Amino acid sequence: MVLYVLLEPARLGEDFWRRALPALSADRQQKVLRFRFARDRVLSAAAYLLLRLGLEREYGMSGCPECVFGPYGKPALRNGEAGFSLSHCHQAVVCALDRGEVGADVEHWTAFAPERLDTGMLERIFAPEELKAVQAASNGPQAACALWTAKESVCKYTGEGLRDDLPLVLRRTDVRVDTYGFGGRGLCAAVCRRARAGLAPLPRQVVTAGALRDFLRQCLNGTKGGKTGA
Image (cartoon, rainbow, N blue to C red; front, side):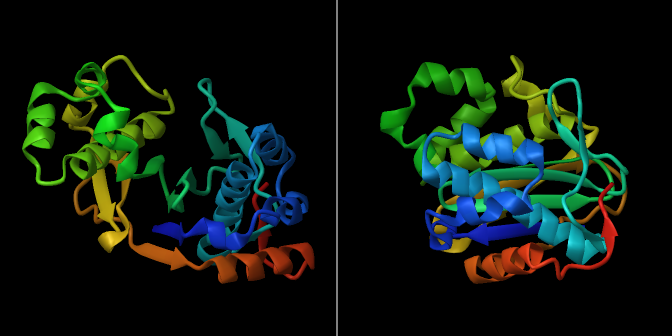
């Protein structure tokens, strides 16, 4: 269906999470409050509101979506009408929506700056041919970031989280991974879905901080209509 993207979430302001709490499910409220820093609380709250916005636009659902959780903690809508996956880093928040299972990840390439990683860690993440490609790339950290987000999207698709066989996950033939760049922003995103004939990448829909604040106001004012997510 759609990959919703919020760029520059810092524009929401440090108090955004406080204003957003009443528009979040009880589970998401607890998740937000477990974060120590305001910036991380804002990102977690924004991810859930991006989900609410996407469900409203694409499926006509309103209210807090009711979720169930898989054996490894992966959330899913109780009514099963859509699959979703949320991810965030300090520079962006994404929400992937599709009819079936989906996994999404976003990261900034600075997480893979040479001073933050050693060769041993890279060898635990990448297959030999992947590591060789990263080392040969003109921007190694960005190449590493693109591969990492692709792998993470597969792990989130399966719901199993990070695995011991990370070097091998992109060799699977039963899934399709699409990657997304964002110009000169240094961001990499990836979406994983079940491979099938005729499958096209999810279209990208950018949501501004102002639009998400407006949506929050509408949620708090009770002006959103349509079906509930129960």
